[in-house]
Amino acid sequence: MTNVNKAKLMDGRALAKRVLASAAERVARISASKGVTPALATVLVGDDRASATYVRMKRKRCEDVGMKSLALEMPHGTTTEQLVTEIRKLADDDAVHGILVQHPVPKPIDKRVAFEAIPVEKDIDGVTSATLGRVILGLPAFIPCTPAGIMQLLREYHVELDGAHAVVIGRSPILGRPMASLLINAHATVTLCHSRTRSLPSIVRNADVLIAAVGHPRFVQGDWVKVGAVVVDAGYNEGNIGDVDFEAAIEPASLITPVPGGVGPMTIATLIDQTVNAAAQQLGVEL
Ligand code: NAP
Image (cartoon, rainbow, N blue to C red):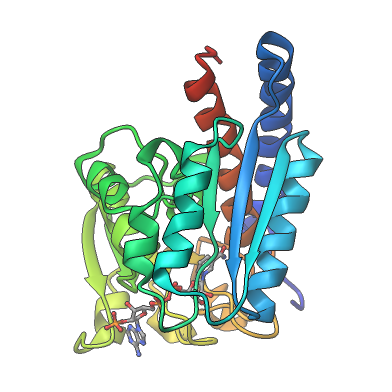
């Protein structure tokens, strides 16, 4: 990042630090009042190196805030039934307050069937259909962590969503779809784009708020960005490269998330925050 106008950056690292500090304080309160340490169970299937790294990072953050983390590792070749059996054991374990199944899981596994085995009260990563339904309806839920973290960043930087035109690129169940719902619930007018969308650049040029969740490095070009737009880059591609051409987009943008240091830290912080809240709910602690 050369000659960056720092006033335009949405600093996910700084906000995540505050979210984690608050989580640590609540973990201590739960432990003091109930004698129970909130615990996150992570489930990793197969040998994908990036997934293993993400799980390690999430477990490290758990420990940083004083939570327990339990790691379940299952080999490549695990069947859907075997995975569901293990998830059900974690679901029945009172010492586990949140369950995270790291995705992607290896292809032969039916990930939807696996996700649905997570009880909604322990679905701290927001992957079940019940959670997604609650998110769409604006009901209390553990929201998928990346869109939840993005909403917190937008609030932190006082981005006006009411009446704004928000464009989301990507419609995955964990990112683009819930993102669009959260923006609608915040009274934005939302256009949800995907790989079949026609004239994508012209739609993006009308965005007051742009959320890129495509999975293609530097996909969004600088000249697609309207002057004054708020640009959130959820992309995380090999080599720490986002879905937006940052160097070009920062010129027209009024605010922009860097990669790394924008959405990524907020995703993990939200996961931790929601696990603490899940523990509090399950243990009957008012926070
Ligand atoms: P995904 O499941 O692969 O979904 C990608 C979406 O982008 C799909 O809806 C796809 O459309 C759309 N798309 C693909 N090519 C397109 C094109 N040429 N034009 C318009 N839309 C296109 O990915 P995801 O899990 O949502 O993740 C998206 C990005 O966010 C990735 O870079 C991922 O690494 C990143 N991510 C970051 C975090 C974090 O913590 N920072 C967390 C999760 C994901 P179709 O539906 O039509 O195929």
